[in-house]
Image 1 (cartoon, rainbow, N blue to C red):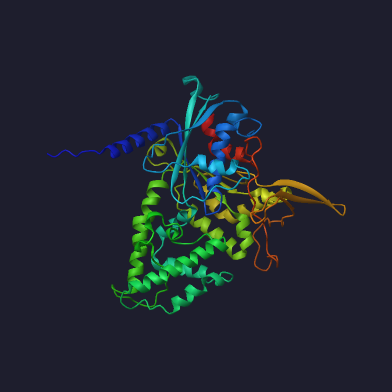
Image 2: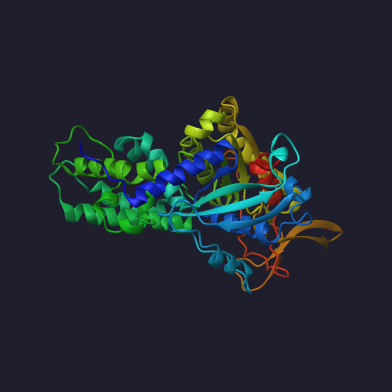
Length: 468
């Protein structure tokens, strides 16, 4: 009888899984999904969360986070992660961007990163306070490119379904400037003939260029495949070199159409599925960051596509009420917070409009989640403040403005932002001049301290019950 040898790496993985299972059973480990499309502010949020919990954890800064307001948080620090095959989130570099003079936003994520925080606290309720003087909660965070997140819905689609959906987006009025060259070349493409690798590569490159143009100049979320935008180690690999194509009858196995379909299916199986199974099937709590202002700037089509993208993506996560056995062996997300990020770019009296608008965009998903036993909330936040509210008197009238340094300007300005709608507008209701919300650099850190809006509310909702 042969004896199977367990490699050192496999043993470490088993030990890590066993330790997480034990911590989950004691409610000492929470895996938080910080979800958001490209540009939603995931990296800045994680950086701010670490900064506030490790060096700014006081009741003046985080008054609505119960464990801090009640002075029960002993300390918080970053600890070695259990997933040794995933790079560590570069908190030092990301925080340096926010703390430097002048400050700047951390660079966008181009790979998967992870980070674990240990929060040591005192308990004042339940049996736990009688077991030990202090307890430790391990909060595990994963950062990843938002472009890769948008690939998850492909798992539920055929190549034909995906092609139809993508071509609908590329044909949307307003995007024609960026898509015209690809759509024109696609009209000349014969998918029924034998495989021509040079032609496939040429059209794939043109499609990739189209996606890059859309990412640069719009806020369209559904840019797929995501690895065309951030390929990582797949740069130049045929598995990401495919593009949407409408069907016209039957195609033989050696046709160009079948080659594209095979690449699409291989991408799902070899790229998306491992990413999904390894990183998206064992979360406990979820934060969904939404860039509503960017979608409003783009227009009604992008706002509608943002709604659809959120529906499809949120639906890929495992949600539901988790009992003890479920937390041990098949954890589900039992709390979801939807948050409009960068809300301080809007005048203070109108920030509630963003909450109501997001609630309307997500009312169907919120209802489904609540029916499954999930606790859901919606709010506006700024994990890192970039503007200050400022009132200006003009001709006897008080104007609610914001003060900050726009990304397109060298100096600080006082700006009167447009008023965001509190519900989804139809195309006919859309302002003729559209919306023009500015993006700002982060505010300078005063005496090494970052400012936020409702980060304490966010933490209380997501993990407050684990720190009682």
